[in-house]
Length: 590
Image 1 (cartoon, rainbow, N blue to C red):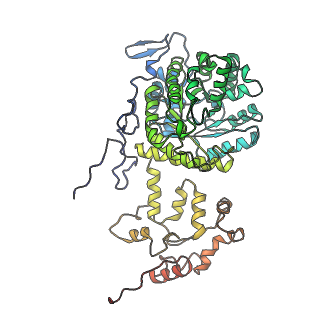
Image 2 (cartoon, rainbow, N blue to C red):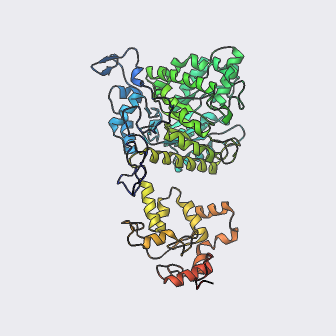
Image 3 (cartoon, helix red, strand yellow):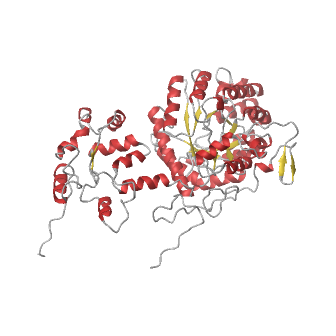
């Protein structure tokens, strides 16, 4: 039998032990230390990676001898980038390698030195509870969660609660976008409570309490220094939006949808002057270097509608962000670059690979992107689709979108839904890229599922409570089938019983013969209450309803085919649990 040829490109198997029968990833062979560490094959017409890195934009007073760079006499390295350039592995680099698993500390140092990886770790924040993390395409895809008080909603206590909730649901970084309440107190409380890097958009604090007309270099630098002293790990600064770019948005459907971008555009038009953040960029670098605050170069002209994607305004600003990346590297600062936005699915790869070319591989941090504009209330889903493609094609960090996007300030449950959707996107991209070990978790859960080991299944699930609650909503006895198919139609059970098949027989995953659900926890009960599928008065009986229906005794249910003969189990299951239409017994032809 001749099988179709597979488009293998040398990528690593994302499964540590090569589990299953899949050929593995179709991505390119990894090139850690090169421009294509983990990368997708290019669709024809895509921009090639830049041939330059941060090594090509060294401080003017450094010198190179026999392939090594040397700082001026008396120089003390401060930033992660400066340490890496001098061949020094910091404790933060070692911690990152430990957390990543597939990278050595030496590889982390090399990626940081090349500018392809950042470790946002303000020296002040390291004095609190910060656990350093890496953002770069050689590392696993990271997820950021946005939060922040507004003038009409939330406050310090609620924002700290949302921070801890985002950490619970695996956010790798958090941005405090507060524009209301006590901004200083909220920021300080978040920094002291957080274990993840914290980012801000300092222009919000520059404007609150004063007129936009008062914005100047002194205000900009004082605000950056104050927040740096508090411990903020990365700043979004919209320095790439220039006076010449503003006319390019005149005919956009959605105009300028970045808060920082719109404020700076108005300031430039009112003053007939260049963006002050562009004008004082080197001075901003000096402040940020002192505390090792990472630049997150903001995309003030990101598209806010599919109709505006990949337009002249967006690309002009991105070109300037490439220039600013070079300038920040010369000053010893770490840099990542922010990206769109709302982008049709077919344009995502181009956007990712254009940034890789123009910004010399600096980590790309993207919002979504949303791939359609007509699903308000579900934009965590529309954007997670785009985010998966973005990460596969080169984005290093994904900024989550919640169901409240375009509608209001996210609450606690919105934060969870955004984090879950984006963890799906990030994990899916890592598996597709062939990052070593990224599929091990999937393989473990697949083995538990094939063995019909429900307890192990729930234990391995990203959201154990939701998985258990949805299962027990229909059937609270851990049978060797679920309520979707019932006993006779369960393909997993049938495959498991075929002795020639390995499915369901993995060592260490065998289920006990009978397991009854211990009943719903408060968290699981709340999940079902929110679904609204069951009356509240029935929820407290959920843990026993199925056992009662099938006449279960202590630890035993008659529908359970492990403890009853097949005919009895099928008969009870069909009568009491689910109705399966069966064809009439075949007889002589009419």
